[in-house]
Length: 159
Ligand code: FES
Ligand code: FES
Figure 1 (spheres, rainbow, N blue to C red):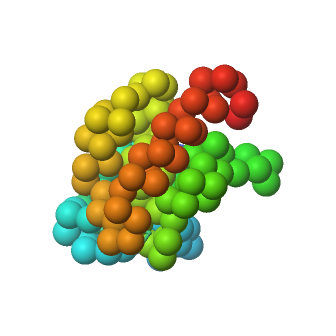
Figure 2 (cartoon, rainbow, N blue to C red):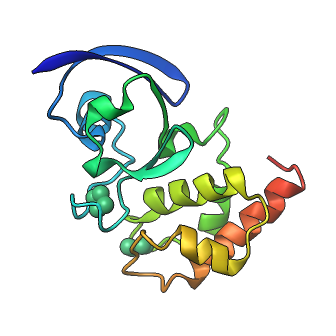
């Protein structure tokens, strides 16, 4: 069955006829070609597909696309502004928090959802917020360091 989906993605309002069977992840990658969001397990277990839907980090592989109807979605493509990377993106690079990079978009989106509501998180709070995101490369500590450092930069207002 197809229905019209109304959605705002990275600030862009979209109205599109979609197959209701699609997941939000399939819609973002296959229909909008926003391939920064990755598909890992496809079962809600690895966090690679994390995006922000209505202010909350969600694993988009298990969100039916129509659940995002009239919703607001931010993906990794929505973070850089005017060609400048966001503090989180920059700090992931600078702190060695990226190796193969497959987990990175999901990690950054989970971290952004945290910092949006808690601008000064402890390392424990960061661990908890990123608990659903699996990284097979970095050992997590550089990722936590990157989030701590981005939070500090954002608090100082250096956007
Ligand atoms: S691909 Fe969605 S949680 Fe793994
Ligand atoms: S950098 Fe490779 S899975 Fe995280």
